[in-house]
Length: 536
Ligand SMILES: *Cc1c(COP(=O)(O)O)cnc(C)c1O
Image (cartoon, rainbow, N blue to C red; front, top):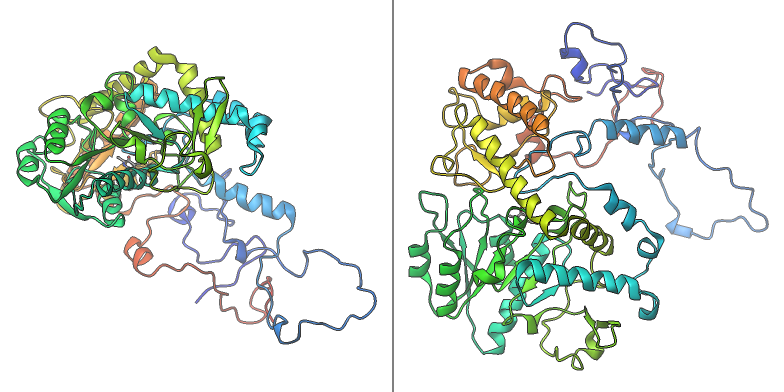
């Protein structure tokens, strides 16, 4: 049963990290600057907060009839300062890229230059409204058009759909282009091939678009098995979806041969380009025969992201797929004016086969502004250096850890922008999860775990190009210590984290029986000095 809560919201008996922090427990649960914080419904008081409205004049009888509310509304009762403190305290229990290294593989959590923010906040960009007359937003359209130009230039492709709002949304856009192209030639193909090393969104996208998904095995090196792929191609295969560099952190060296084989069999090649940060300025996907590829602006081109947003996933398209790209898009006219191409003027622009549209409006304006700022401030040489540094940093981590952690695909050569390890060599009963929880105690966000699926107990680490050597060395030191503890079977690792605001949770219960809504604790009347908001 829940115990009563006192004024600060603290409940005796709540498992708080400070209790097992051992030597010096505090009565408040606070640990100096780290303040304990209950749920918003457990604090405040609806009786002492709110707004005093003047007495209504005239007929005050309620006209709501049977619609009148029968119980209290159940909102938390906090004053403004209490609300501000609540959220500020919670925010301090968070980890952020502005606090430290965020090694999440596949996510490209890098420093986001403040210059991007400054430009994105300029009123001319920040305050535009999607329903403004086109004549009043020529500058914003110019930004979209110029970014489109650079994305085409960097990828060596023919066209780009700017509107998709995330990587997965871009995948859907690309697959819908492929379907439109096949339908236009009266070719009803049903299967999309996806290698084992693909990102999980790839098979999900293909299935969502109505295709049957078939696996292509990986070879012993962690790359697509070219011969197995070739053997499966045929008149029922609409295309392949290949992540390159793949989620094992490896470049698919056979990409051109894969594209040629798929094209020869009448299919299209979708490339998941979320890892473009590893190859930008060095390889052009267009030269590898790719027909469609999304770019995660929030990863490669540095928009702050996490916890599900925000995202922006423009899709570059080959000449064969460009005619089917979605509306709207921007086009530069001979007089230099940027036009918005919508349904009503699409034929004028020779774009009659658009498969439809991905978004109500024009895409993520704030992210376009940030991405263009990033591209222009880096320049061609800077972008090329960024991908080189990202790869260098990942290889530094790979080689700094491969004597204490198993690196199944790191034996034969270097990796790209992320280093992949497995749990082989851990003591009986020790898992990747234990090591990751220990990493929280060491002050780092855990790496991507148990993904990709082809490696047992996978740990996928992406340092990005913006980490300093000193920062990476500290991470390596923590990882080496944790790896040694996992190999030695250190029991304390099984109950980590010990220093976090919350200790280890029952994750199976949290996933199977999540408590998504707050319910009033059962408090015997008079047992606490705190009244439940809205009770009675
Ligand atoms: C992040 C990522 C995606 C999905 O992108 P979202 O923007 O999260 O939808 C797809 N593939 C790979 C390889 C990724 O890293």
